[in-house]
Length: 303
Image 1 (cartoon, rainbow, N blue to C red):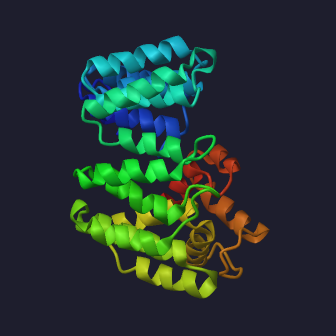
Image 2 (cartoon, rainbow, N blue to C red):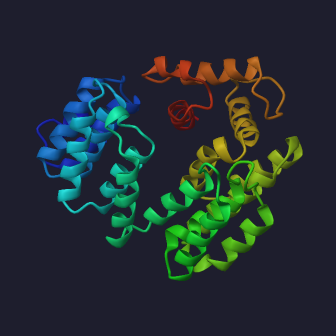
């Protein structure tokens, strides 16, 4: 991949290489190489590279935090016609990721602008602001999503399923029954693979104890590899114990884990996670813990 990308004028190749260096996938994590690859992606015409650079300077990822530069890259992305960049800039302002340069009120105006520009996910962010607001307003959040879904917004329909499945804090606890009803109601918005994925995640959300986790694991083995991987990664936040159980089972199959299949993140389980993770080219990231998204990506690839 690296050899093929060197000298390439294909922006998507440079973008992918930047992601590899940033996440430590197949190669050692290399911040400067990641930033350089994203810049080459932009030079080669890949607009997503602008978003990656905006995020890097926003979060101080491999480069010093620089709100001015980050905002500048977001605006360049917007100028190329990326409506998702409007939403991303809005969220950064709303959640004060630009520090003293953050303007939450501007962020909300940008979200409305993104929605008017055709960004279906903008209404999802507005709804989440209602769910997580101070004070929370779950009724408004539900109304925003329900009205948008009724108008054919598939992102809002999917968000409704997730909201019911996962809940939104104490003000709006999860309701698996309503999540299943919403999933079937909006089935026309889903591909077969996505429907399979979300049904499995609903089963996962409801699963408890080794018996329930074992049934989920058995069901996972019946679906396509891509769907299986997507579900396993999502388990980390849908049902962390189910995630640990599935990985324990796979580690046991590899002969790396000899403990109980119980879904508990015991010392023995963590040791097995780390042993596998350190087989990767970027073992340093293993210290971030078994439930970290980067570690989960590495472990799943190695399994």
